[in-house]
Amino acid sequence: MKKLLFTIILLGCYLVTSAQNPPKVGDQLTIKAPHAHTFNYIKFPKPNILIKRGTVDRYKSVYENDVLVDDVETAKNGDTYVILKKKDGSKFFGYLSEVKANYAKALDAGEIVTTK
Image (cartoon, rainbow, N blue to C red; front, side):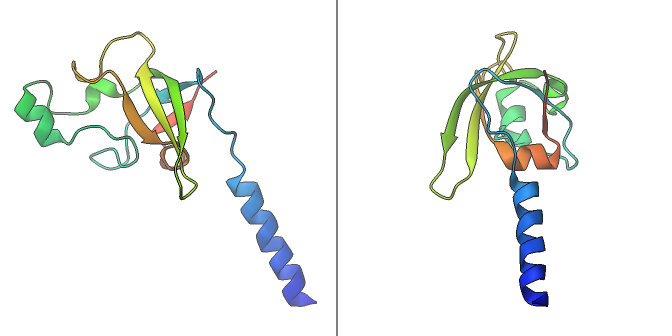
């Protein structure tokens, strides 16, 4: 009986924590500063690529940018990926019109936050 109760409690906790609102096309998000030096779940180019292109050498230019969800994709492993475009229509780092992000992991890591 104890094992059954313990299993039910764990299953309930899992369902509560994994229940996030799925993204929709047109949702507005804000890019925040990552906790590490680079973004792990938003697919921005690595800093050495930015330096070679002569644009910027840091990610500070994308902090606090408002972005819109342009497309939603679901991978075979169940992860949800979103294609993000800037709300003002400009390009990321002067040459990328859109970037791809793992929605759930980027939200959990604090790289993006939902705005209303």
